[in-house]
Amino acid sequence: MGEYSEMVVQFFLENQGQLYDEPVAETYEEAEIFLEENFAVVLNSLKECKEYLEDMGIDVVGLSNDELREMDEVFALPNGQFLMFDC
Image (cartoon, rainbow, N blue to C red; front, side, top):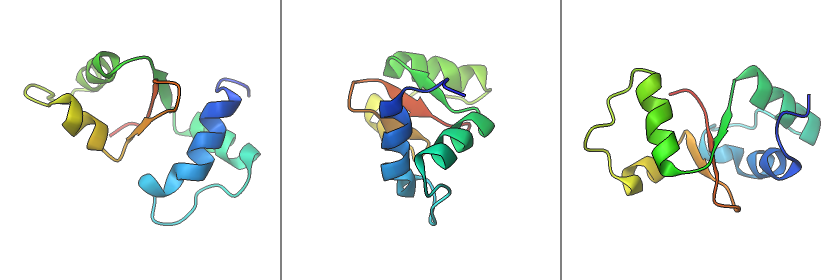
């Protein structure tokens, strides 16, 4: 473990309702394991988020930055980075 910073894990733990109707993690440790098991990635910019989606085979042509930010799978982190899950 330890792939994600403390800030990322804590942010996901506190904001998991953005993506899931019911909690998937109750503790910090459960949140960290969930992130690892679901191959969540931390990206530095919206441009990187679009490239990641393209690599996943998702058509992002015409997708605005605002639309990208509104995706449930995209968590805007307090430090300006983005936590993403596979769509």
